[in-house]
Image (cartoon, rainbow, N blue to C red):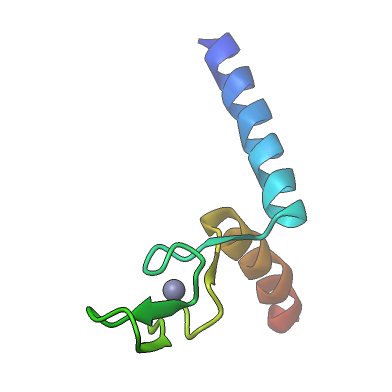
Length: 75
Ligand SMILES: [Zn+2]
């Protein structure tokens, strides 16, 4: 059981570092294209899900930000 806890801790640490270095992932709504095409393919509008940025903040990064800014705001 201790081995699993160790592997989990290492994975979590690696994931946290990865989320600091690569904080963004492709938006799930437009897969990073930032725009949604109309059925005709000629017109498009910015993706609403990501607000036209084509990216989303990874869950791990959100947690890191919450810890960083949350602890600072509490002071
Ligand atoms: Zn999007």
